[in-house]
Amino acid sequence: VGYPPMAREADIQGKVIVRVLVDTEGRYMEHVVLKDPHPILTKAVEKRLDYLRFTPGIQGNQPVMVWVTIPVDFQLTN
Image 1: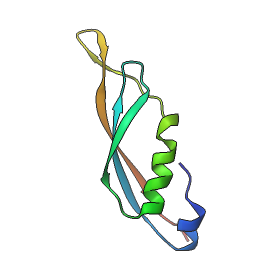
Image 2: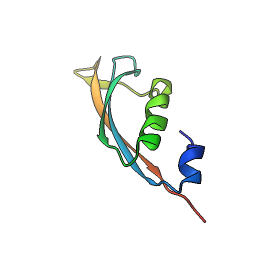
Image 3: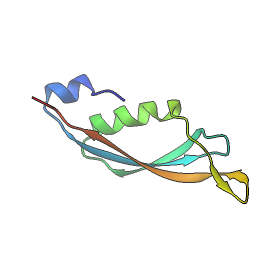
């Protein structure tokens, strides 16, 4: 995802947690934000969700859509 420059300059940290619906081909479909520590961090995560690829869920040897929870931790180091 990369640390948003504005968040780095403002010393903003936190963990964004999103729940992502993955289709039967492992592609992002939609999401729900579960934890939003700051809008700048959350927007940075949301802008990248389309680029994620997953292994689809399997049920009865068939791929199925599945929800996946993803934590993204933004921590500044000194």
